[in-house]
Length: 287
Ligand code: 6GU
Image (cartoon, rainbow, N blue to C red):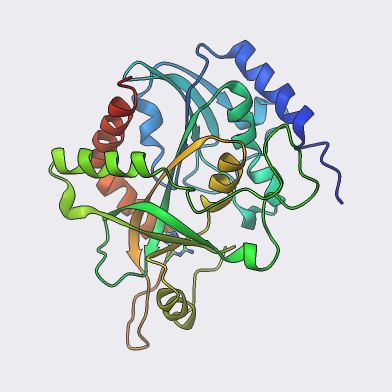
């Protein structure tokens, strides 16, 4: 088995301790902002930023549209830590390294993780700008033996064979539906299955058709690995996909997936997303 020294328990613990020493709050909620969705972090009060490059043991962000910093602060009075920019398999890191922030969250005391991403809409009823509450996932890399929990299990985080049938917290999903209704957003809020691929190339037409037939509603290159590692260590997970483009399913189509469209849709929906997010957070914190 490969050495876990740069992403194992000791490395995660050292990073968590370093962050807690320098952070203004001890976070209970950990948020990961997807491509073009980093605006949420700007809503935090009493912010403190850490560039990924200054955090010990942290990977570095390499993609345009991902700022690459950790933001601590309060959202509606709830202490949060927010990743502005995440790590992807296609950047060349190991899958254990890209999910290391989840374990650092856990060791800082985070109880709930909110993951967001930009995704392609496979479901033909979905429109660009729709927000999909993730109710389940298909872990394609997992079928090929690429799972962040591969390797020796560290019992300090969780068990060898964690259950994934309850990965996406039901109570949180119901809450998110309710908040969407209350805000008058129900026409663009869906609930569906997210399929992760390794990327960085977008899907072919044949691949989109296949994924759609397999029961996936949206496709992307993130989130699932983080959800698995977060669930492994017992954190609750809530995840949203912003449908930034429709997957091409038809050989007569002239449409082409591209990163600029992904970022643009994020910007266009950003205002509602911010309001939506903040309300989800607010209701989450009513205890
Ligand atoms: Cl169409 N595919 C993938 N794999 N990721 C995406 C996407 C599409 N749109 C946004 N992210």
